[in-house]
Image (cartoon, rainbow, N blue to C red; front, side):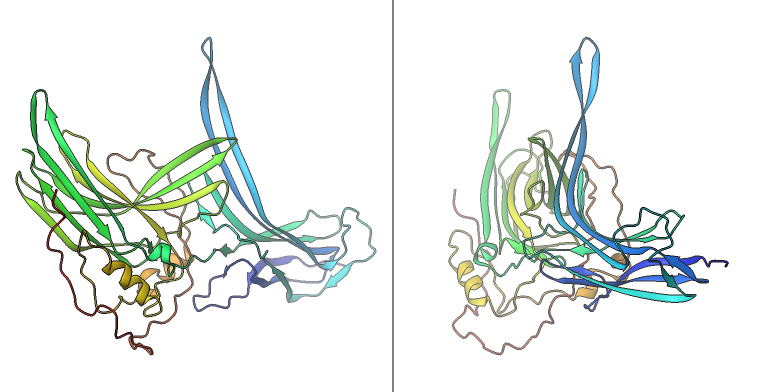
Length: 412
């Protein structure tokens, strides 16, 4: 008898979200099908699946052993989050070539369903970084007598929800700094910087309103700027490797001696980026907003305000009282407030179909913070956020309804 050939052998997931992209969280059921298309009858010993998920870190460093001898030190670490096996056809033993217990698959297309439950414990969000990654996949193996196993694998995305509607992430972030320039025995006046943002937590597609005042009493021309940075930190064998990536930036107007510039809610939009990863023991992904003054011939004057990039956007009215009251209590720098929070951006405007389906490959990037820096940010496949309603079903008449303007930074 002439046996048929396997025409196609793939893993397909059942998607239950509007974006039609396989995205899951801890405790979710991952279901799908192994699809086999054959041109004729084939005999199969077994069809197995193996679901795995792990975080992995790896980098190398050159070491000097003396006497002109150098060697390379490898740093690796791995954390397993998922390890699940199942047999869809046949039996466990597939190392023999006996004709017993074979399953016949006839010509045509055949689908074999599978399902598994992700662990209830927190899982690390899928991520691709410079020196490490977090990956999840299902691998299928087709075993036939006297032939090498056929294998196919398909990844799926996992993310842990970060709800920015918490008191910690709704709290404003602020700071002040000043710097006096010296040149030999001459001392110029100080450069002062004050900055504040409405909250610590944001989601991709939102714009950060920056409230700042820059006062230049020096003799030099300076330029106020702001930038969002992603910091990837990798841990292995007691060592740490850190990479900073530029995510987005903006530039203010040049400021001559004796001038002051005020940012009354200058907008800096967050592009589609991976959410913060804070619970993985070997990989951390953190964000910060740097508001700084570019000073020619001197070290920049800067403020770093921590950010958390979440997955659950700001509730239009659910957290209104806490967020508005916390903002109203800030006395040192008044901040303009809208009558109600801005609607989260439409999902389609943030991540296009091409971005969702495409895959971003790692590129070599610089690891220093100074100078121009291109960001390598892992493309994260978000689920669409909840629909935003402009109508408040439970209006809060006691909240601050009158807008306030930024008059000046505190006296120094």
